Amino acid sequence: MGVEIKESLWRRGKSETKKFYRIKLSKKTNFITFFLGLIFAAIIVFPFACLTFEVVELYWYNQKSMVIFLAVAWGLLMVANGLSNFFTVKLCKIMEKEMNDLQEINEYAILLYQTFNIGFGLFIFAVLLFFGVSAL
Image (cartoon, rainbow, N blue to C red; front, side, top):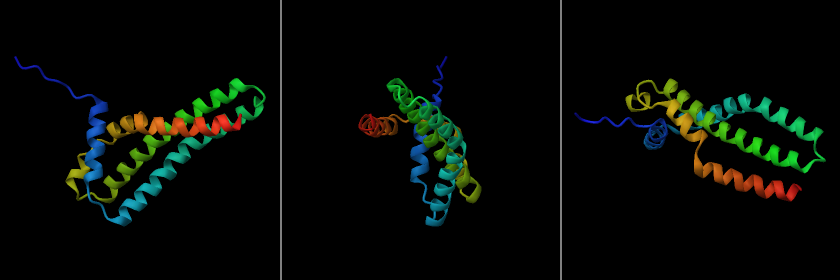
């Protein structure tokens, strides 16, 4: 009558991220996948960022719009971080098919964990708060 404790996707993402960081990849693969991961994430997030910026331009005179803009910008940067890490792992798995430990990594768990990464979120929040307050 053993009780099975199912690992949450958050904890699995944290352990999968650590596992991915321990894998030794060639510098070429590491650079290419990181750069392409950033580009793919930017392609997805860019239209939403442009739309948000256009809305802020319309309501620039209203201070509440700046708060909403900073909140949306924070959310978009968090999603971009998760997507960038997801695409990096996915591209590494495509480029290095012979690495079994890399193929076992769950990129969706990494996507969830990195999208809601507390450390990155606090850092981005502090940066946006600094620049947002100075813009007001």
